[in-house]
Length: 268
Image 1: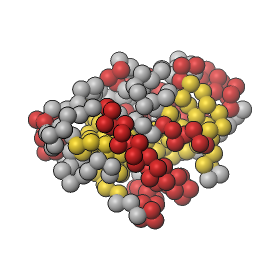
Image 2 (image 1 turned 180 degrees about the horizontal axis):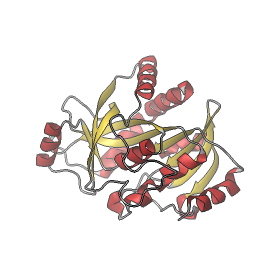
Image 3 (image 1 turned 45 degrees about the vertical axis):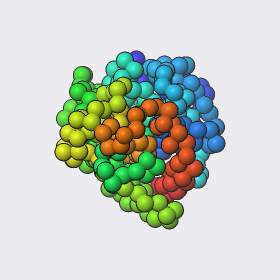
Image 4 (image 1 turned 180 degrees about the vertical axis):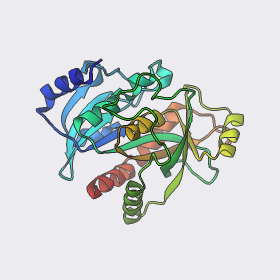
């Protein structure tokens, strides 16, 4: 797929809408986009995009304005465990770059590996561990997007993290800082795996974000990652894990998460 074909199709519906901020909304958080939508295009209709199959992911590319800033929002994402390639998963991020996006905010629902975390907490991602077994930049390099061997020493932008901290203080939110580990899924992790992840330095675990963040950074965009801690990872509590519980927690904290995102966007 040639990105120009995707951009030409999007332009038909958006009339040369040029977003400066990209927002990737994870499990249960996609409704945040509805209130600010100007143009909504289903992934299934966009050349090069693949349809999301996971409950809680509507699968739309939404263009809107928030605090007088033009924003493009991914209402749900695709995952490696759905059978998609890393290239398919990260293709929308490359499209964001070509649309003019400079700042990308990536959200997700994650399990607490750090025993001090509780469901309903928010965690700013300061670094990540790719435990998915594949790198999204493997394959032929597109020199128009980024260099062959990109530095990954600071994927998550420190200035954006400071802005998120300021917004959280204004809202009275106790924002955690930690390392996010991405596993391939779709199974939740075993207690032994979670114990290993803790020894490796992870604070939260999920099944997304790392591919998108890696590619966004590679493309030269500034990246902010925020996890909604939706459950205790396996072995920390006696509760069994389910996607329904993840959605339930994200629904409860969605108003607060929305406030935080809006204030961060306002500061950009």
